[in-house]
Image (tube, rainbow, N blue to C red):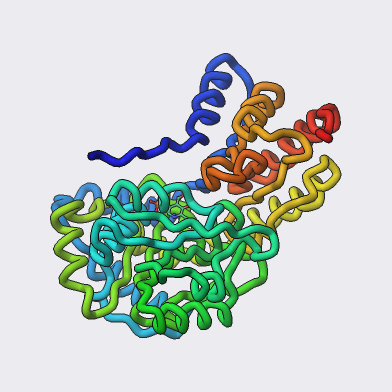
Length: 379
Ligand SMILES: Cc1ncc(COP(=O)(O)O)c(C=O)c1O
């Protein structure tokens, strides 16, 4: 039997946003998690340059792999070999490869709830069982070593995400160490989604590889490198998993786009431009954190990293999808309903992505203020 997969509900909000835009309305897109900036200038210049000279066949860039090796050495003090890097078309296929090479159908894999919607849906598509661990304010919306130790029976695997989507919360290094220890003791395979690495507001974003070299790590050019549509990412597997991972990548996806690989290798050198994007997100985050409590949105998960604010809107509604659609219709500000990330409690949350420009954030705040002030509080 085929598995039942839910669509992203944010797509319903986005569809409405585009219809309203076509009617001439001014829309601020804060519903999807993608940078509004393009790829770094030098990456685009490199793409222009190679278009005329490279036949763009199936290809894996040795230069890109080398730069990823250097990235782990410099940022994380971790030594990996180029052979351990599987270049992928973004984190999405990386996740599919990691799950498929690690688990058989029926495997139980722990994930945090709330969490990125595709974890649950990918597991179901691969006929595996998501074991959702409710993580609320007390847990900072994150999985912990204690929660994994308490699961009975032990799951076969766990997907951790730090900084997380939709909350932006970071798992500190000490907790990563504790998770590694519990997972080793209980034979739990760890997949670490590190797609928001590099986007944080003061706190370090340690890689799981620093404390658990046998973990599988998924990463991407979609967020920090601002290249979502180029479809490029990577999976790091332990030496014993290289053959299994390469066989799956070759059969399921072949290679990522050659053009993206050329540009991606260049993007890895564009630190100054990329850090300027982070400075913009930091300003946007500060503005929202200053303004939202005054609108009645004071219950917010601490956004340590990524570019999201996950806010409790239960004072106003118990139907986040309808609420986000109404906010959009009335103000032109598009946000994502929490039900995408949490099928149980998400109806009382909304996610605001601040990976847009600072003037857009300021305009969104200007429009949302009177709208929230006019909403009656429940209870
Ligand atoms: C936590 C997380 N993982 C993975 C992805 C997939 O990203 P991509 O396939 O563009 O690399 C996303 C996209 O938003 C995400 O938020």
